[in-house]
Length: 203
Image 1 (cartoon, rainbow, N blue to C red):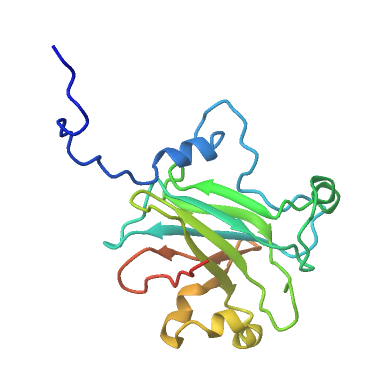
Image 2: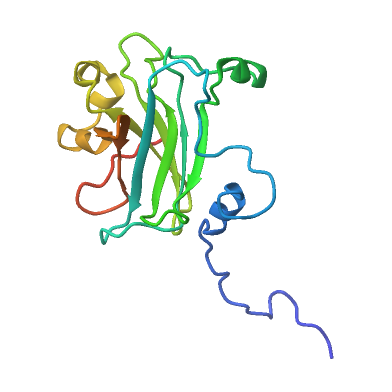
């Protein structure tokens, strides 16, 4: 039997593919119980890191208000003096890794939780902030946002990036400070759609 030519065959449209949810298992393998290397995790600041120890926690929430259980959150930030380590040796010397990655699928409340330090300002006039990337099912491209701090109102008012966000949306980028057993925690929910959708940036 002769084979059909490409012109004669009609296979239909190739199904579209979205990112994940495989990425959470592959990029945070240890967290999900897989026995292979996970170079980054929820801990950015080691014992010798410069800055005030903080915990950043929150949830990734869908348009119906439900926490997403297979999201992946990555953060990057300078240490308490506004420094990014430039080499692995410098990161070890500073005790600061500057990058963290965690999935939301192993926490009972589907939270992401990072252990870090409150960042210093990188440049004059810039408010302390943490850069955030979100990956989740249904996204073809990851989403970028920032975390600013509720107790940095004066610096926030002068930050050019934050002030470029419409005034009625700026609160979606502010993490609220709470005290938990003597530890400083900042809570920051990332809302992907709907009421109070987080402001995302084109990067």
